[in-house]
Image 1 (cartoon, one colour):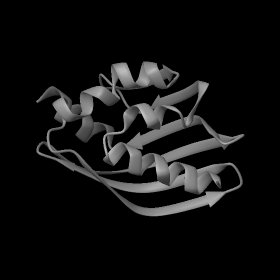
Image 2 (cartoon, rainbow, N blue to C red):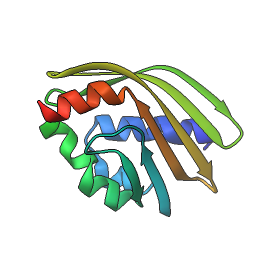
Image 3 (cartoon, rainbow, N blue to C red):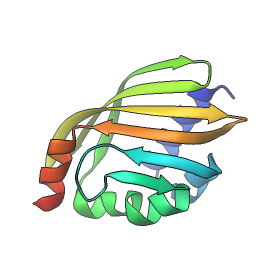
Image 4 (cartoon, rainbow, N blue to C red):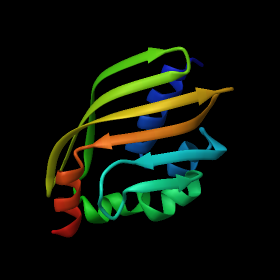
Length: 123
């Protein structure tokens, strides 16, 4: 599986609510980095840390959450996605960047519209 195929499969698993399966795509020591200055910003150490402190909160804090992939670019071990997210309390775009090594996601950087995320999380 190419890095692009792995990442796109991850988005499919997320959309289907298969979070345990999604976790198998991440290296044990993967870093997930969220830009901005809001309660989800910062570095997560491994998938389980990210799942517990952010990903599991998405349905609660962003009701009706939906993520649409607008564009994907892949080069060697890097995969970049331009995404559009909507929920009851947000309509925003973002860029997600992955590093894939040895068939696992080793780094995931989230560059979402942090002002809109902050407003949605504080509302």
